[in-house]
Image (cartoon, rainbow, N blue to C red; front, side):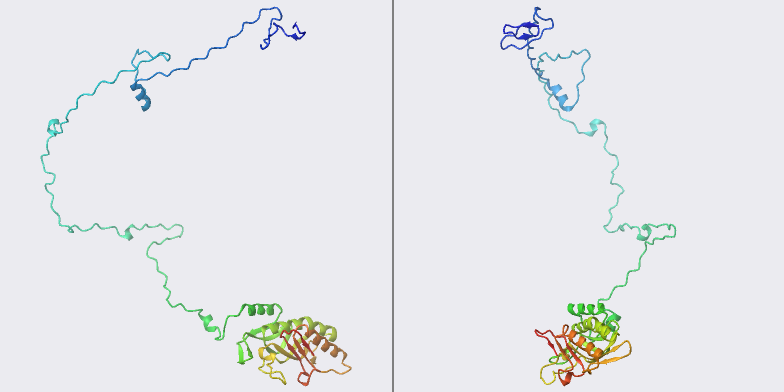
Length: 357
């Protein structure tokens, strides 16, 4: 350990001068400084030695020329001299193509001797093997036999294909495709439990007729239509809804029974409103006249003006009559006029202001 002039402590060796790097010393202070190491001189780049033409050709062809025994190898650092030019080629010479000069003799016999001229078409065409002979024969294995012979061809269909066969013959002559609205209405009738049959369209002139009528046999579940009523599908759906939601509950609470039949006074008919020249809704199958009901206890209820002491019958008739005004555009009954004194007229036509009398 030594102390420099400015009081700084240094480890071994002399104090480095300004700009000089520190060099440690293993011998401590007072020993001779290690000799300065000089940087190595740069290694001169190796110069490639030119190769002769034969060596260059061997390198291109990927082969090495055989070296003669005792031949000295060229030192890598020695400068090789270029080989001299190759010797000139000999003068061109002519090649003799005479076969006799090389010992080959001319043919003794004529190769075409013995052949005959054949008339075109005299030789029959080559026969090809029959298809049956060349067809592969499969050996049956475990009861399976493959027949590769001629298979029967399917019968050819006639050009004129019939329609639907027996179905077309059994279809009634008045059959027509239903519009989507009519098909959906019939689906709703089936879901409500209505039993009906489709009948042919009816019409008797201007203002009368039903394009797609239905004959209702059972207007609701367990409630017959007596007799069957011919209506349009929309009117049948409204009547079925009224019987199911209003008539059945009213019969249960007022008469303590259940209805089994609706008595039909009139359904479709080509007529006018009484005392008017206006076509009635009956002419389009859009109205039903109900003259009474039958019940499970065997009793029959007639629509008419009830007496003072018929409390339960009056309550039932009033209930079904007023409830019908929510389902139909026109409801007329006893007390309106003499023409409706014995039945309820239910008209399914939509009106801005309904008539309930």
